[in-house]
Length: 430
Image (cartoon, rainbow, N blue to C red; front, side, top):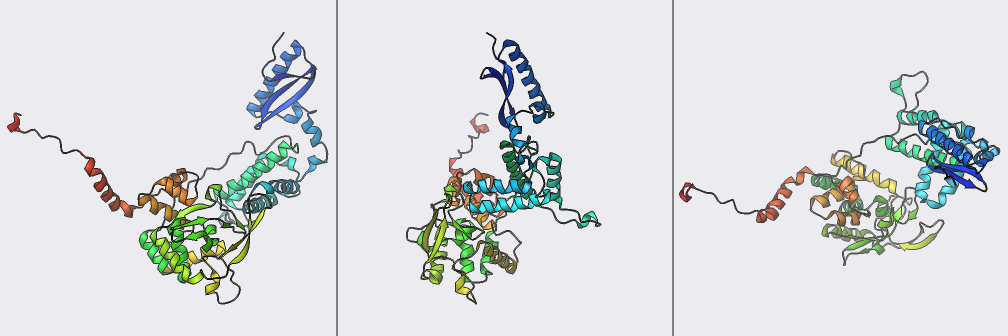
């Protein structure tokens, strides 16, 4: 009995072939009896399909017009628009991602669909259209009648890659569900981008910034940020109920998102992590205790990772903007966006070169590593799964620590160095 060629298999007395197309294994029935002659012909057909896929000339619908994939697409679904597709994808995506991530997806997809045309049929979008969209996102649209130099400013490579990643998922969803015969995003690779290096504060700059903070509470907030490496959302959501000054630690139990929702911390490794407090951090918290520890606890709602699950908590927030407010509009905790303003203001007053507020976290990591802390310990304190992120992102060397490191090597390595080799002299027969 003749063997089946590669990619050919029986199917209810007939033959069918299978092949990988755009990352998905497809099976198509040929509708011919399972005979040795037909098996050979099916093997040749399958080899031809594989060659066309490899050379980029394969047209799925022309090769298999009776495929169930296209029987579905011949219905009214073939007329699905970009706006309708985006709405369906986002609705189905919402249960599996955090609300803040969903908001990011929704914002980016809304912009790209607006540029492609929300009423445009999904099947009419080509790879060329998507490449033009990417270029427009990068460079900004040129205003009619103006010179190239006055184009609107484009977006960063990281932002554009994020937009294109969303579109890739969108078109894969359309392809997998039979709305389109091919995925126009399949051959588009992400743009290359440089890895940003951390830009930590020096010790002198840190002292100047803290001195120029608007008030005592803001100075305590940024001191704690640099001395613990907490994320800004974790700082905003930090409560006195999470802190044990006698034992010298705090527990990271929740996060505040940019949208104002309380959630678990960013990653699962960050949840309920124990952050050990150095003496300086304990002194900062003792000072802040005088300002907010006796405030009345407030009820909050924490949105858990499980879809639509919420928990109620009572929190006395460590940092409360209301204690310095001149009106009743301030809440019981800082909004994440407001931290950047206090940071920027302190840098400007101190005459320190501008950095983004997130450099407080980078400063903690760089200072800790320069002081000789174990990278695994630093990663654990910051909520990373392992030390790889610490090595790759935060391991920037600060030249001001050179002398300390030389002193460390002198004290630790000299004792292992053997005495100078025995020096032979003429008196010893040489």
